[in-house]
Amino acid sequence: MKTLIKNAFIIDPINQLNGQYDLLLEGEQISEVAVKIEDQGYQLIELAGRILLPGLIDMHTHLREPGYEEKETIKSGGEAAAAGGFTTIACMPNTKPVADNPATVEYIKSKARDCVVKVLPIGSITKNLLGKELGEIGFLAEAGVKALSDDGNSVMNSEIMRRAMEYANSFGLPIISHCEDFNLNGNGVMNEGYYSTILGLKPIPPAAEEIMIARDILLAELTGARLHIAHLSTKRGLEMVCDARERGLQVTTEVTPHHLLLTDKAVKSYNPDTKVNPPLRCEQDVEALRTALQDGLIEAIASDHAPHTFEDKLGEYDYAAFGISGLETTLALIHNEFIQADLLDWNDLVRLMLINPANILGLTVEGIKAGAVADLTIFDQEKTWTVSKDKLKSKGKNTPFAGWELQGKVVMTIVNGKVVYTDLDDQGKIRY
Ligand code: DOR
Ligand code: ZN
Image (cartoon, rainbow, N blue to C red; front, side, top):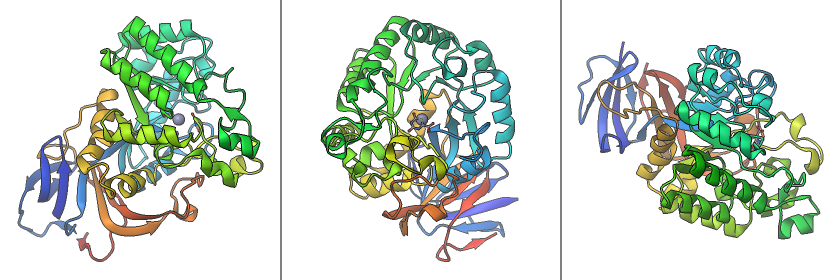
């Protein structure tokens, strides 16, 4: 069965495409890309100039399965990813049991067969994420994990982190570091500053993150490891990452939409959906991250999709779970706030949400060309929509962006040549 996609505005810096084309899909692959392809009675998708990108990757997702299926399953997380325009997601190991062993990784991989997007498991650095003993790094590598991370927890013991980096190196894996000094964070719930003072909430100083970034950079220098700093949120942290990169270390970083678009002022509402770790920071930090993103100093944008149940987020701010459900809003938020505002262009976005994450995870991406796998993200720049908890595919409705009106929406996601999500209205003719 062949599918003809007509009049797609393709943006693909991998194959230097930037213009209107037709595409023919055959089975799982793209079989032809040309300015005009005759319709010979194929299945037809008329895009009328909508944007078509090579399928995006979210390199930082929490899928919660096994163990916390009430928050999310691999299936529901996959549907959320597809609705958000991602064709591949890398999932963090803080499940129950933790993905610190090959059996759990195999379980995730087997469940992922029923998932509409591709799932790449990340293995833990230490057993049970406790930071006390190294996980089975060699076996995890053999089971096919793409990176190692104790995300959600920090590896506080520097000797253990050193050994982890050495092992990760010998298996060619990057370490994705959740940087948080557990002693200094003092069980805080929001950023330390003016707002924590007036709101009377327990503070987390930026230094709790920065100290661990500094340590991990020193350890990366000592071991030659590939180090990726997860969910960077402060200006000083950014400066250290830039300095490490300038010194030739293999240090990369990612930023989330919420750390780019919200400050700690948002906590004023005491809305538990603003509670996230690292916390929403002050204006100067947010400004520094936004500028760095535009200057090409941050490699990746990741959702840090952290779905929680209604009950997990219920009650007082102090007791609510940390995390934001992000898969379905990441691309649209970045489009609305950065592309629409001419602060980034689509080529930047493909670098931030596909090419660089793929490089960090050691994946090859072919982009849009004949013979490549048909993983595609289709985006309508004109379509407006309002973020609404009820409409999220994710089980986690915990978004602080509810009620935001956005211009630009994912309208179709294709994985291995199959349409896995569609929201094309009647302007786009589909004969299917
Ligand atoms: O807010 C967060 N939620 N930050 C993390 O590092 C972990 C995550 C989770 O797993 O819920
Ligand atoms: Zn995370």
